[in-house]
Length: 267
Length: 302
Ligand SMILES: Nc1ncnc2c1ncn2[C@@H]1O[C@H](COP(=O)(O)OP(=O)(O)OP(=O)(O)O)[C@@H](O)[C@H]1O
Ligand SMILES: Nc1ncnc2c1ncn2[C@@H]1O[C@H](COP(=O)(O)OP(=O)(O)OP(=O)(O)O)[C@@H](O)[C@H]1O
Ligand SMILES: [Mg+2]
Ligand SMILES: [Mg+2]
Image 1 (spheres, rainbow over the protein chains, first blue to last red):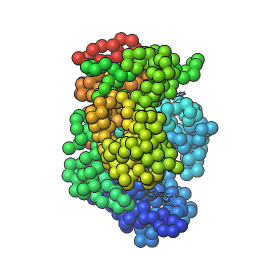
Image 2 (cartoon, each protein chain N blue to C red):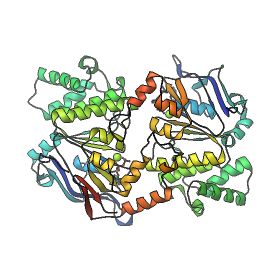
Image 3 (cartoon, each protein chain N blue to C red):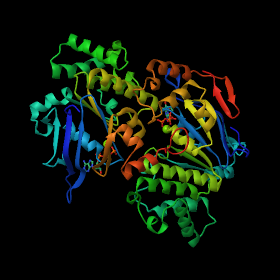
């Protein structure tokens, strides 16, 4: 295996409470290779989003990352970055897409302006350069470039989510963290978006950390998968192994709770 | 839809339009279906296709813009007050959000006592407590433990079981369940769906099961109706519709259901955005023509 792009080691995160602390992430370690899609699955509250926020350095108090934890991106510890390094790191190295990201677009700004703000801040692009890049990125997500003149409300939810993804990819990040990016969308739109991201990562080479509670979807999209339970990573393996030869009882239990389309419960 | 018994509840060519002029939303367009004792009808379709609108019309929360609601063959809008009271008791709803639908200030016992007093005035004194115990047992909760608890002391799956018990308290003939498991953890979803299927069989209930998860529809319902943009585009026996879809939107929906046996990298599995857009465009038009694909399986032209 090539050197990992992302290497999470002994990650432990507590939410500091008035009386006692709550361990949301408990000694979690995993690697993501360049260009790889790695999935984190598990039920509500198991710590998936807490990990996603820590990797993007977007965690806030009361979340406290314990000292023994390291998150290496290209060999550099993300947890040691100062403010200036962090500004570069965000967007250029790691971009994050949330479940409600489609609502994160500014409703009073044209799409073009929202791309420009990011491209100017992080790459110092001129208006004309930014416009070209915007057109290129919109095409990537199947949106006609001339629609950059429109406002967010003129697009459907699925299109807005694709626009957010296009903005995230505009700075060529090495890692895209996606926390339930399509849960609010219907299955057809979900498939269109994830298929597109799959093509783009093959073409552009970025890696994806993909978070969902839908194991079937996860197996379709991911190269490798980690299963979380109560803050711990209880099993990790290739998508095929997690699907066909799960080892942990909890993984088996998760599978047993999915009805399949063509009769009965999965296996 | 084929069934031997007479229908309990029927939506007969019901339309519902919100607003007027060019911005009007046709949330339901000429919707017809019936609910029968001991059978479940699943209504599936994407977000905004009109599923909840159908449920609200069945619950008489919305007045239809056109068409009629029939209860045991009689139009509800001309019914007298006794028949309306009978309807209120007979048709019960289970909501999507098991958290919001229970009052945090009251115990579980209280949540069950209220519908018993409202709909079952024949129950008096100790009989009420016994019925609460029986209802909780029916939904597989331990009455001694759960009855005195408050909603926040229960898990999502347990709360949804309480909601089911509360609906059963009225001794209903029909249950309308709008996305009853979409806010629950995956590992408890099947338990709740199994419970609903069991209630349907054992208490001979008619069940309207609304979901966007077509895989669970097969698990719960004999009959299915696929909605798109306010119309039912395909309906019939659940197995027949899922295994032999005829409408382009049903095909598109089925092809996009997450399936661990198909990798996104597999070119055969690709959903094309331009084809999907074309299917959505075609499926949105109002269509009167209906074709029988096979016995107990119908499709609207597109
Ligand atoms: N700000 C906070 N303060 C205290 N506890 C928190 C806080 N945020 C999250 N937690 C707790 O940490 C645990 C992990 O939460 P997290 O949001 O990471 O879960 P998740 O796996 O993303 O769940 P979901 O699938 O519901 O999004 C949960 O038990 C949650 O209640
Ligand atoms: N009270 C209302 N006023 C105006 N428009 C409404 C109202 N209720 C629903 N609509 C609109 O009617 C359409 C159908 O909505 P409905 O809630 O029935 O969809 P749904 O199939 O239940 O969707 P979901 O899967 O998201 O719950 C939507 O376009 C919705 O915005
Ligand atoms: Mg989360
Ligand atoms: Mg709804």
